[in-house]
Length: 354
Image 1 (tube, rainbow, N blue to C red):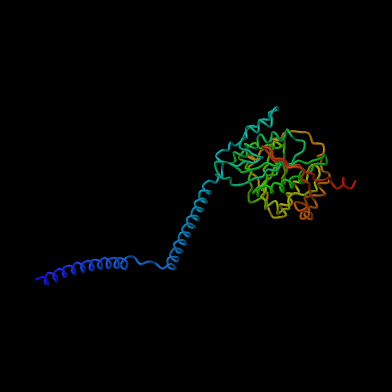
Image 2: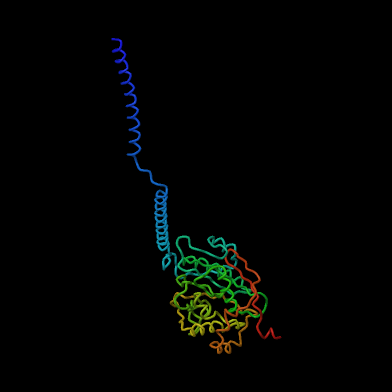
């Protein structure tokens, strides 16, 4: 009986031990099965390849988005172009020349102008225009012109700057050479689309006379009060004219050899014609100017040599112009309403020889 009890007891212990071993095996099997049936780990090299592809795809997508943004900006840019005809134009205007007008008053009326330059805020201007005004001892005329010209140009929704090219010294005045200087100096500031060559004593009466350039050189003074608002003569190209950078460069600018009054504008007309270009003009009822009357300046006497010089233009235009314009810049002052460029342009050859 005792032997049977011991055997029975050992059998129970053995069974218990076997049960524990079996449970441990089951646990080990479950863990082992979970590892082998779960997601397969990607080898390091393959993982880097996938990440690289993802980054490249992300970069491509970002580039596409940037390109689309640029396209959108261009479209917005186009939409923001100022209209071909400004809605701000008034047409014909009555001009007033107040005897006690001050520069400060004109500055107060043109708060959007800084250092002679203005850009419309409501849209992008279709042209960038440099207005070049040769000057000496005409302060009152300049003040009247600034008074009317700034709002005139702003209503045309132009990006513009006004340059006053002041001839230093008391040598004979040389309008043409000063305009060459103005062109060269203005291009140091900005790559202007259009240049307006403007006498200081002519004030436009109608803001539909657009200060922009066209496919051909443009003459803007069809009539003035001093001539009964008629063209001075058939080939007249003086007073105020407009030419693109390409047009003016093509004719080599103005001649530098016309000292005193007269001839240089006819020389420019001949240069334009020699290059196969045609001068165009706005309608006569629009291209009207008031000339502020004055006596002829001392130092700007009639150029008695002008007819001889005009006869030589076909032979001299390639050597006499922008490519031979020698001068010394004495100062560049950036005032609120204009940039003042003071230059020494030398003296006439006859004075140099004496």
